[in-house]
Amino acid sequence: MKRVITYGTFDLLHYGHIYLLKRARELGDHLIVGLSTDEFNSVEKGKKSYFTYEERRELLMGVRYVDQIIPETCWKQKREDVRRYHCDVFVMGDDWQGKFDYLKDEGVEVIYLPRTPEISTTMIKEELTEL
Image 1 (cartoon, helix red, strand yellow):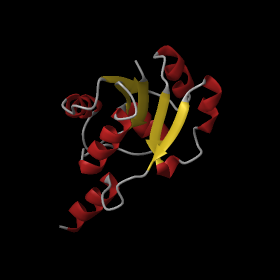
Image 2 (tube, rainbow, N blue to C red):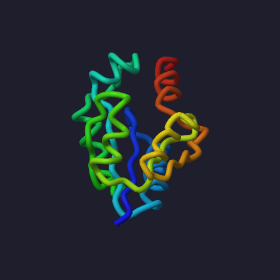
Image 3 (cartoon, helix red, strand yellow):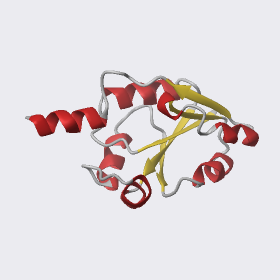
């Protein structure tokens, strides 16, 4: 079984997220999503999600491409997760290009997928404040 892992906040789940998850799942047989916890988003990333971790988790559980969800609690856990879950492929959006190449040392293929340019959670939030 080929295992793929990706990470994100996935707040205000939209078609760009779904498209990324679909393409990630197509790279293997089992997709693991590291979902950023509320504490990690607040303290480390400096952002607040509209939906709580549990609400975002419920939304992701409804996406057919997602096989497993784990909490992302810190930046450094990625190396450990790749080992713990025996991952073959690590996937992130191309806005992270090069940032996780160090994981290749773990024998995992690192792939940066193009984001859907016309949609983002930030864009949605900005447009909603203009209404």
